Image: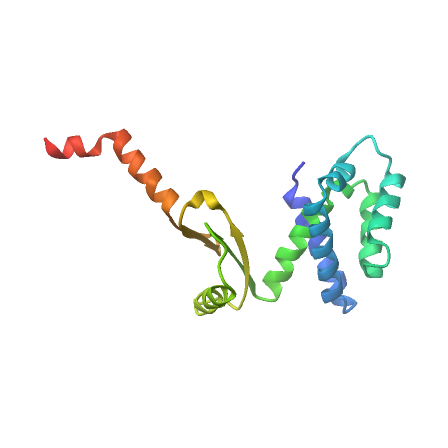
Length: 187
């Protein structure tokens, strides 16, 4: 169950503590690792959210997965989450931590979706172009491929969406035909 308010508060507390202990980068890498584990393994997320599995079993499973891969602060934080029965929110907390870290470091995530894979040169030119926008610091590009776009691209940054795909153009044309916009203009 999504609880962005709770995730934001726990993430903020962890950021403050990691800054205080000079472990921000280590904890950030741990949160990225946890988020990738949750993205790769839906079974792990199901285990975290399962009300049937006891907390001590969850703690052992999490410890086995993250053993000697995470900082002591991250391990203690995860133990706290399990103790407080908040382990089901681990993915949301990790995502909120990453978002808050990016905000602190002025890193902007740019999502690019294309119909075919693009070269590293094109990716680099997009990063350079986006980084010239006002208020943009460091740019982190996330490129994905969606063949349903047919052609063109979709670019998302700073809550802005640029949809220059053929699929969107075809949907616009279909909508115009369904609305019979041209018949009204003839009369």
